[in-house]
Amino acid sequence: MSDTTLAVRRFTPEAVSGPPVLLLHGFASDGHTDWITTGWPSVLTAAGRAVLVPDLPGHGSSPAPADAPTAKSITAELARLVDDLPEVDVVGYSLGARLAWELPVQAPVRRLVLAGLSPVEPFGAVDLDAALAFAGGGKPPSDPLTAMIARMITAPGRNPGALARCVEGLRQEPFAPAPGVISVPTRFVAGTEDPVSQGIDQLTALVPGSDLIRVPGDHGGALRSPEFKTTTLDFLR
Image (cartoon, rainbow, N blue to C red):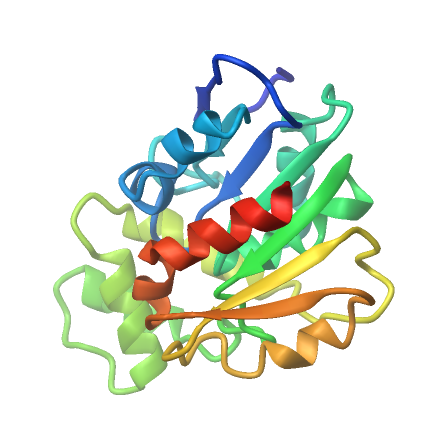
């Protein structure tokens, strides 16, 4: 595999039946929490797929970024991770899906699963100063969105400063989905009770031939639902 600054967990099947699968986790989480604890590597390797599970910059075991990482810089790092593969399937959840949207133009992506994806940029209205003040022991932010982000970056095991830099960098390049960016087979997945992915059907119209599958659960529940695994495996076959 190519050199990368990201922490990456790799899983190998006994017999290979298709290209490796790259799993991209959500904001303020990590590859272990989103994918390994929910059983994805074992399911995929049983189906004959090698699995790559990186931690995004500032998340999990990956180094804290010195500068604010933009979507462009993160996807470039992910593309380097797979640039020696002839092809790769990609499954992204939440922020991972937002980053995966950019990957087919930079990496040899064969099929794409975008789940828990918001059609709008979620970080633009966050008051980072208020969130960091809360992380330093201050009062909870009055703005609901900022309060949610503040709680996420201060969860046990998280690095509030590193995650705040990620927010700063990501909102420098707001998510602005447009037609023509994705030309590979794509499946969208959303929880039936997930407010984050409300409006995800707008994105299917931007990707010719794509479809949208609803699975049970809110933002966290959909990620952990067996239906998400089933529809992903069916699509990747």
